[in-house]
Image 1 (spheres, rainbow, N blue to C red):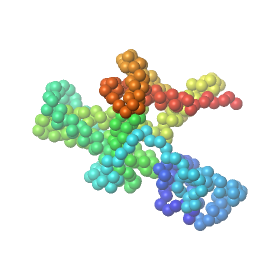
Image 2 (cartoon, rainbow, N blue to C red):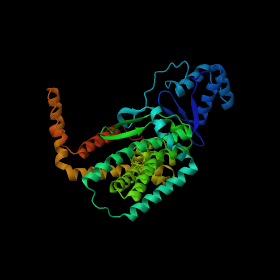
Image 3 (cartoon, rainbow, N blue to C red):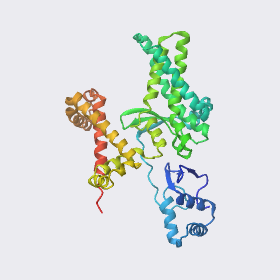
Image 4 (cartoon, helix red, strand yellow):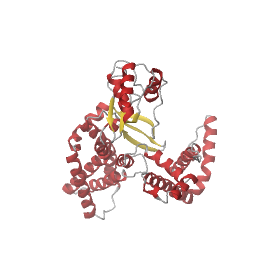
Length: 392
């Protein structure tokens, strides 16, 4: 065997496969590369694998050429028994400063009671039922009396608990489909927004329907939790339960937002079979707005708009437009704070260098101002790495 044991190759769609690696990569490969992987997994020597590959694809690769092909496809990922390539870096995560709160075993035990609900027939019917029930509750109680401070004291812990329930939903779906999962942790999205996350990276090995159910698993479990709170309110008429139920339902529905790397984004990625959706959409948008892209549009008499690339272009434009709206609002609403923020950061760095970490002024800056600068830096870095395609 030329590959390490316990490696798994899974079909992604009609012409692509997913290979999960010990280094944390999920490689999307074509049929030829998938067949090369299978040959390496089932043959004892590189020469036998070369002979089989040449025969199957009508090639005449020499030993050195075949070895170079093998290492170009699989080297550096911890797949080969004698890997001579330098280890490839793990793709960066959008969630920074990650800290595991629950191990994979503990998260699996907590999520186990939900496992039966993720059978596809049960899941889709229950998901629709929960949405309709919570909509009926919301319509029946359109105006709530202003909650007291004591009510909020009860409702807020219940709302925070729903965030853990959300992550348990993703883990429960993995357990239902027999996909190995990690634990549940805490981190910061874009270094600013605190988030909980569930490590379900290996779900790429599952079919598209199972990936979609796993994407929706957190929303589903949060809606189930909200429905139980609503039922509790209907039974005992205790207002904090209704406040928490409606807040949890709103938080769950917010997860459908497809423009940040949360459930809605991964759902859209799987519905369209587009891994790395944000990166591909950004590339397609920049390409479409270049002179070469505009010339291609004119030459094709608009037929290029009928291709699949129009979805990526539209998504990229929508994403950029939302940032433009956010930037305009921030400038108009927080203009003075935006202009003063660099001075405050510089002053903070001077204080730190002098051994006096005074945070009073910086701590008073609205979070939206920090978010604006972080997103601006991110967009500038993306633009700095892009070069327009040369006409040929």
